Image (cartoon, rainbow, N blue to C red; front, side, top):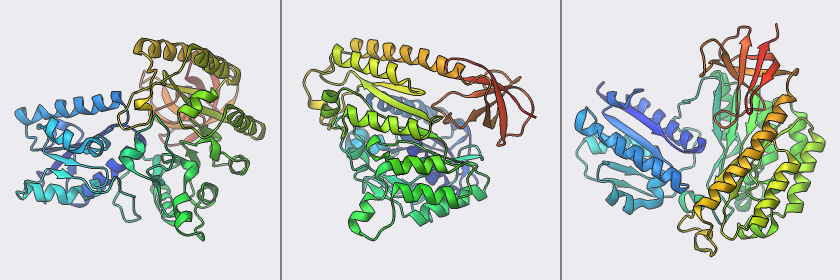
Length: 451
């Protein structure tokens, strides 16, 4: 392989997409490609796109057009558009983006090295679409792109649920779970390489293994067994689970998380709404009463647990009364973390055809009102942390000022939550150190290392 083969990656969207990028990265490095930080230095740019909602689709297309400009002013030879947007729109995207050279769907990205090789050798094929997704194998040559002390661990692909607003099944297909032994093997390999925090990702953790048991009743894969095995055998110091559907957060699962020191007491449990009429329209499988029982169970078994959730405002048919019920629910439950999305009308989804679509101004107002309420709740919650000593994973110098170190305590997930600033004491990047909290902002904490 010529040393001139240089590649730059742009990975958009969720951590699950990032793992796909890391598999492409590993595949190309295995074939001798050099990965460069700046697109201007690359002869190949690969954009792994997101096609989930309108905002992410626009971001993906804008990035393609931005990178395309390099073809006229630099050494860029191949512009590759991969991922969810490509898979979702296939022929339309090929026709609409002549600036790109290759289009690789979410079921073909693992073959990126061969696709580029054929293209360089003169193949005129531009489109590579096969199955909707690729289920990571034990031999997949993945390279962790995160800081060495943390890594995402993807346990499945696709989704068995059919929420009315969600396009994921259209893009990624039905649920496909990895074998537990393969997941454990990858986890142990990551920990052996220095990873301290494993972040388990999927479209819905609580459905893990359902498809395997449907095919083979003797299969042992389940959310409980996966989490127990990783806690007991991976060697990771922190194990964080993202994307828990509330109906799968059983008392047994909560008790397991309570009982294992390395299972972070952090429940990322998107609820989307709380009004029963809205939940039914969204095709969510729980009622308000059932959701409240789950929350009560978590808080009774693990009082210190952090609950992160997210809601959708402006779903078709949402009235002011529905929204006020949601506000009151958030005010009463005082969640530690809340995200809020304005409903995006997506073609191909059940909700995309519903009447009573809500106007954008109303969506924005409801979004802002909910997030202002949560800001106040968060500030109060943060203030209660002052005086506590928390384990903090040190991540380096602060993004705000080089005079401070920055890290995360176990209650803060990377990229989506706040951080902990350290204004006294020294530590190495990747260390987990005790920090006494001395101050707070709305979403961030401030503290000093306890010697």
